[in-house]
Amino acid sequence: MSYDRRFLEAAERAFGSEVDYGQLVKTYSVEHLGNFKEAAKRYSPAEVVKTERTIISGMPDVSRICTSHVEKKNHTLRMHCRRLTRLTNAFSKKLENFEAAVALNFAYYNFRKMHLAIRCTPAMEAGVESSQWTVRELVERCGE
Image (cartoon, rainbow, N blue to C red):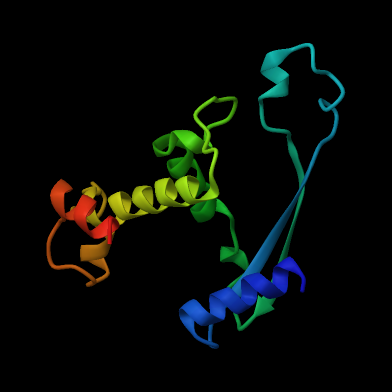
């Protein structure tokens, strides 16, 4: 089964069959790939030379198909979860430990952390919780 099909099935399970799903494919420049002598170039993002938006399911607004939300989420996760930062020795030796660390991070982000833009936690904004979790609640509920 292809990655696209698995992603679409997961989106449908999460949001229903009426999900509007589009894909943005970015093509990057390859000019800097052979030059590993300059660290600044090695760790800098490559230049985007082409983007292609495709409707996969439903009727998404093509002009709004973007990667910014998932890129922001990935960046936040990398910044908060040391196991996902690049060039680090803070890795998990067991898959179970890695999964627990990531789950704890998501629980903290959604149930404990107050977000300035919405002035509450994402769980409160979504109506899943009526109040912010305490650290004790976070530890107890994540240990279940």
